[in-house]
Length: 338
Ligand code: AHG
Ligand code: MN
Ligand code: MN
Image (cartoon, rainbow, N blue to C red; front, side):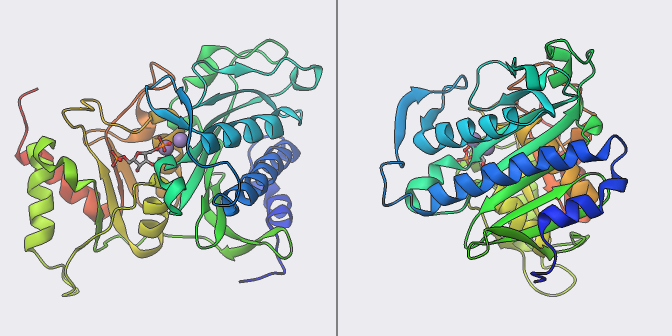
């Protein structure tokens, strides 16, 4: 790891890659970086302070909100609002998009969509969680409040996206459309340092990640793919392996480094899939494509889906190109009656 290149320096160095006014994105990413450090600090002492467990409130999607979900949401929102680049955010933890009304944000050009804490059922058991973010240029007029149209843009309009993984070490991984770079947090310095330059995912992999507890409720093509992985051995002669953490960020991060596929198909309880298009699937799709992989809903490219609602769910097949293509072959070969 190069302690000689910090995230802050890297962003400035790469500013010219960013198609629009560059200093703006640096400032925006600075707020995400700061909020990530604050959330990281809290997660690290989760067993010591009264921050684990549920708030007693359900979010709009009927999921139990954990205290750290609410904490992370507040910190990211506050950090974004404190700088003059963002006019509004949409979050898993907010029913509606939030418009920033301060004078400071009036001329802001960007909106941020986020999953402030991903994998929140893992908090209480000391397993990796994450934050996912997705950044768009607003389409409505600058100087007016952001509109629904600003938040419901297809993923192919993202200007930047990334995640933070709070794991055995904490990392921030992001793209602005010129490759993917990863930074590991050095707590002694309080700084993210460039550790994974120009990350790429192998075209083939051996890891498949899926909640197999839902097996009997999967589409036939997905069941056939799982059997294919169990019964066949890839060309490198090492059998497929199943790995599933239950935090998208953590499963994605491992597969990005090692090669693999993450699948969350539709199930009976989640007929449209479980993961949210705007702040889970799109940012991960942008990252995976930038790393040389692909992301689909089993039918079309995730980033080409035209969103219709803020908390829209879609099936997700994401990872090494050849693995996703193989799933597609099974889905085509074994179509289910809708
Ligand atoms: P969140 O904690 O933000 O609601 O996201 C949970 C997501 C994702 O991180 C994870 O991969 C998936 O839900 C796990 O779902 P299952 O428990 O149904 O496998
Ligand atoms: Mn999530
Ligand atoms: Mn979440």
